[in-house]
Each structure stands twice: as structure tokens, then as C-alpha cells.
Image (cartoon, rainbow, N blue to C red):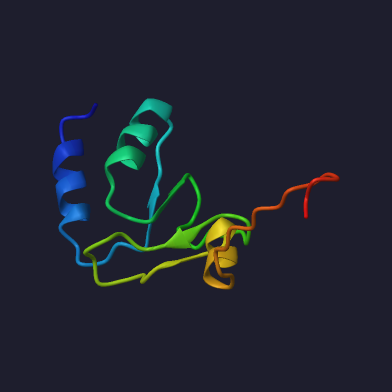
Length: 95
């Protein structure tokens, strides 16, 4: 870890925004160190923070002032469906 990484992380996490962030580095361990600690709903490594694909969940960080809920991935299906359990007995004795 670089000497100033803790300061950089603290500054980023002090923001009231938590929707998306980007980390640019050649050091993959450093990239994942930041990705695990940044308080944003999405972290992109070595690309712009506007990266999004429909099959990936997208949303903010709890307690921040950006990004309410989730869209994309399984979250889009959950927001448009009702959970229901159905039990069925199959066979000749089903009456």
C-alpha cells in the first residue's frame, strides 16, 4: 500500500455521494484494496465511472445522498415481481 492510500480513501469516503467510483492504477492489489473499501455501490478499475451493463446491479451506498435502491441484474426482476410460494402434490393420490 502506498503511504497516502489511507488519506485518499478517507477523502473519497467522506463524500456524501456514493453511487459510483473509479480507481486507476497498475497495481492490481492496490486496485482491489480500494475496491473493497470505497463506500460506493459500484467501483470500476481502470475505466470511467460511467461503466454499466444491464445485467449488473447498479445503485448507491447506504447512508449516502446518491443512488436509492438498485437496478439491473436480479434487482430489476425483484422490483417488478411479487414473491409467491406454490406447493403442489403430483401423483395419483393428489386429490
